[in-house]
Length: 175
Image 1 (cartoon, rainbow, N blue to C red):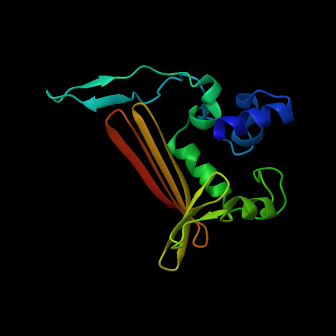
Image 2: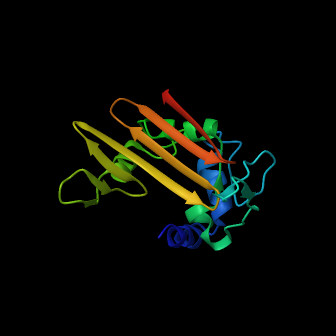
C-alpha cells in the first residue's frame, strides 16, 4: 500500500518520490541526516539471524527502488525526533509545519477499528488504546533492521526505537 501511495505522489506531483520527500518533509523539518534509498556514510550495518556458532552475517545495503515509499528511508534518532515533534504542531501549514492542524487530525483519526477497540489504523499509523491513553505509531523492518515509533499525542511524548548492527538505540523525549 505504501509503495502504491508513493506512486500516486509521483503521478500527482510530477516529482520522484525521493525528491518529493526531501522537498516537502525532510527539508522543512531540517531532517538533514535522512534520505531515501541512499547508502550514506555512517549507516548502521544490518545483520542476519544469529548462527549456531553465535556469529551473525553482515547484510549488504539494499536499494528498495520501487518499494522506496514503503521501506527505503534511512534516518537517525535525532531526525526521527523532528518528525515526531511535527505531529504535535498546530496551526496552518508552512515553515516547519508540514501539515495544517486539520490534516494532522485527519491523519491520526482511526479509520479501521478492531472489535474490542484496543487497536486500529489511521492514515500511515497504527492506533492503540491503553487504558485512557491513545497512541499512534508506525513500525517497520527490512533485512537487518527493525524500527518502532510510538507517539502519545495528548501528552506530547514520543518514543523512537531503531535497531541495526545487532544493537538497539532508543530515546524518549518530551517534545
